[in-house]
Image 1 (cartoon, rainbow, N blue to C red):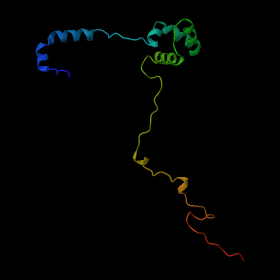
Image 2 (image 1 turned 180 degrees about the horizontal axis):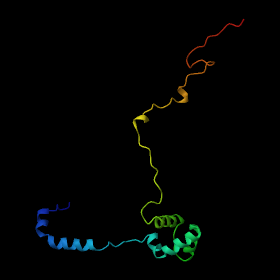
Image 3 (image 1 turned 90 degrees about the vertical axis):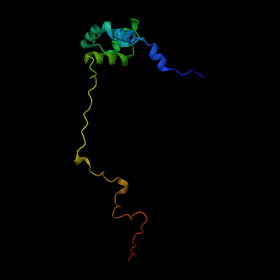
Image 4 (image 1 turned 120 degrees about the vertical axis):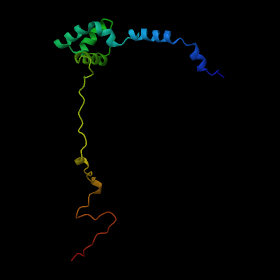
Length: 136
């Protein structure tokens, strides 16, 4: 069984000014990234790729050239990068649809399904017997 931590004891041993200084130093610099993304690899080529795309080169053609040059990038990820770059990274790649807000007039009862519609004049209703007329 593990020993419980006595936080009163820990609080007496902590050098708070030293910890605060270390945290301030961390806040001043960027955290290191453990892993690079496709966007990180393509960033130095950003302007050239955008210029070629504007000239009419398709994203699949550009991806094929990148793969031939040793840059393994999927077509979907490349299109995502292009979209992000052309919209200045503001996340506006796809416009959101504006949904109409409900108003009091929207509380209209739903229409009845076809199974609940009254039977036609010629057919008897379910469970009812029809009148039989004697043939003259």
